[in-house]
Every structure is written in C-alpha cells, then in structure tokens.
Image (cartoon, rainbow over all chains, first blue to last red):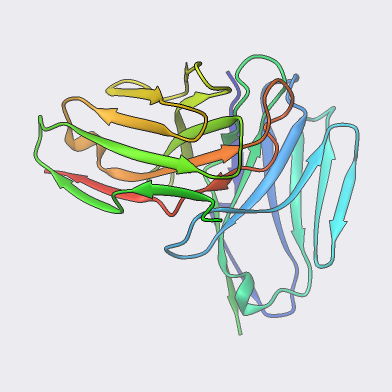
Length: 113
Length: 115
C-alpha cells in the first residue's frame, strides 16, 4: 500500500518568515495530494490540494508543489502569522486500489511572534 | 447542517470491555472513514466504506469491526478493548466513490482511554 513520509516533524519560524514542509510518497499510482491543518484540540481541515496533472497551486499565502517524477510534494506558507501555528498533515490517494487517504505523520509548526 | 457527528466524545474502558463509536453525516456523502490519531503517527486508517453496503480494511484494522448501517451512518466497534487502542478516533466522510476521495470532512473526534 501507499506510504507517505513527512518532514520535518517540528518547525519553528519567526512571524513573517516562510515555512516549507515536505512529503514523499511511494505509490506511483497516487494522483491526489491534499494538505490538512489541525489546530490544537480541533479536527483536521483541508487547506489546499493538488492533483497529478498540475505542478503547482497557490491560494493566497499557501502553495503546494508536486514533482511526480521524484514522488514528492511540498507545502509552502509565506508571511507566516501566529494563527498559522498548528499541525499540518500531507496525504495521498489514488483512484485505484484503496480509495482512501494515507496521511503523513504530521509537522508541528510554531510561528513565534 | 451538522456535518459529521460522532459520539461519544470521551470514553474510559477497562481492558476486555466492548464499545461502539457512532458516526453520522448529513452531507449525502458516499464514502465514510474511521481513522485513529496517535502522537507522532499521524492519522492511520482503520476501516473505510466507499459506498453504502461496502466496507474495506485500512492500515490498522485488527481489533476493530465496522458497520455501514445506511448511507448516513458508519459505526466502529471494539469487541475486546486493549490498552494499545487508547487513542483519538476520527470519523470522516467525503463525496468521492470511484474517483479520488475528494475533501474529507472530519468529526470532532472521540478520545478513548483503555485502562
């Protein structure tokens, strides 16, 4: 089955700096790559996703890039703010085999004011 | 429109006891999922149901059973609880069926402690 690895496990940045979180996946059939944000004590919520026919997608301060050849994708947050502090999860799935998301282990992002 | 509702929110069990976590969604979604969340291990898929009447094992199905009661409801049962099942359990749903899962909508989570 799919295996998703996520790095780093913790990340601390100063307010206004950029943050980058990286994930690799193992199943070349995977074609959907979402990112979820989980604030402390809350449920995970989708913040951005990308499909395999697209190399990059942006939504205001967040962007995701995908390299299918290398089987990795990344989340970029620019101009970080204290409210960006949370745990971020990457995930992957395909439309064959197990049709469910496999999640990475998460990255705890702390934005220092 | 409540989204995904799961009960109970908290439960303490003794080893060997059984319990059922209930989950319901009101978004007319086709797919439903049960994940467990443990520190440093992300969200691991226990079971999922791609459509009413079907269920499939995920990454960590041992010790659990599920029932897709109807399109709205998907329950998770622990027949004989073990301390290793202490975790936060999340139910989720999505519209996807044969295609990509699409966005998952999560419930608030159920914190289970097995003594």
